[in-house]
Length: 166
Image (cartoon, rainbow, N blue to C red):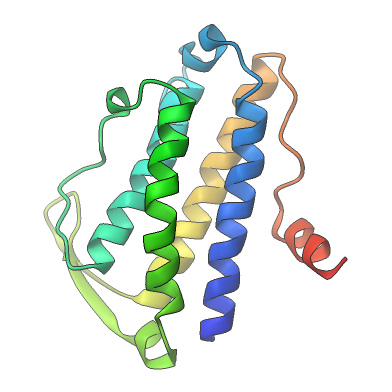
């Protein structure tokens, strides 16, 4: 992966997230909080998990050692999550945009949540963050459909490429 490709992956991650959040914003507060029996229960909890993962990985990249995800309860609503991302995104962009080829290939050893040490390159971690986001955005799409709400606009990587090309 080149630095340009890393920046493009991050741009895709944010673009797809914003599409998902736009669809989530149409939910009623009850729908947003309803326990649907999914991996994280509700749409809110799934969105909070997405945010938490972004926060944890950025913390690790900056030398932090987070021991868990922030609790979903710290976010009162979608607006609070959007505000948290508005603060996190510039730092994430600055970090990724600061990576050169050697930086992407550099390894980081960090304590995983299970207590074991893990070692990945920054390239691998960025790929994981984007893939993880795609997985949970898919869950959000399913939850929206189960609630009878409109699904997000297409979030596939190819849709991102087509939009950018057009």
